[in-house]
Structure formats: C-alpha cells, structure tokens
Amino acid sequence: MSSRMISEEPSKVGRHRLYSNEQRKDRNREAQAAFRVRRNKYTETLELAVEKNEKTIEDLKSANERNIQRAEVAEQRCAQLDSQVASLEKLLQAALAENERVAQNKTPDTSSASYVSVTSLDQPQDIFAAKWLEEMNHNAIGEFIKVGVFL
Image 1 (cartoon, helix red, strand yellow):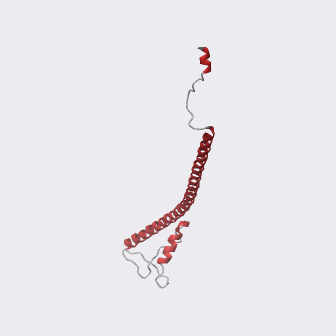
Image 2 (tube, rainbow, N blue to C red; image 1 turned 90 degrees about the horizontal axis):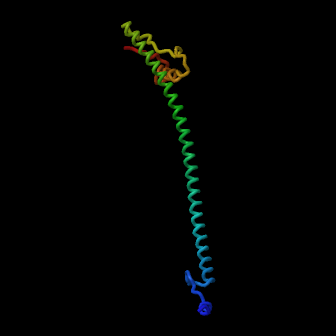
C-alpha cells in the first residue's frame, strides 16, 4: 500500500489555472496600462477642477475688492450727506428764528429783506450751506439778491 501511495501524484488543491503564466502576465500588463490611463484621466480632471476653482477664487477676490471700494465711496458720500443735512438743519433753524422774529414785529420790511448770513456758521461742514445760500442769494441772471424769509 505504501508503494502505491508514493507512486501516485498528489491531487492539486486550490484554483485551477485557466491561463498560462505568459497569458497572465499579458493580462496584468493590460490591466496596469488601463489603470494608468484611468489614473491620468482622473488626475487631469482634478487639475482642471483646481484651475477652475482658483479662477473662481480670483474672480471673487476682485469682486470683493470692488465691493469694498464701492462701500468706502458710499460711506464717504453718506458722511458728506450727513454734514449737508446738519448744515441745512442749522439754516432752517435760523430761517425759522428769523420768521419768528418777523412775525413778532408784525411788519415785514420788504424794502430791506434780510437774509441768513453764513458768517455765523463756524463749523467746516457748513461749507455746503454756504454754497446753497450763495446760490439762493443770486437770481437766474446772476445778480445778487437778498432772500427774505417772511411769514
């Protein structure tokens, strides 16, 4: 019995090979080549996405800078308008005070109509009010007139 066992070849255990070693090497080479092509394509896709995102970032940065500049200009304009409003409020108060004074006298003097003087305004923001008064104290042909405030 023992001689019989020795002479018999042991049976092959595991997978049965369908391809020869050369065929297997060829299939592995093809699979590796296909993998490299897929990997390069994926890398190119990622690089394009990175370039697109970098361009978007640059566009957003430039838009942000433009918006910051616009905001600064708007803030400056707002400050100018605030000072103009303050100047015009002072002029309005002065005109109302003049109207009150004239109303108390009950006799408006049309021959020597009074106008609000800018010299009493002492703050630099009253430049706008001075320009407005100067425009108001000239008629359409450029002659100086006194603007009276009557009730």
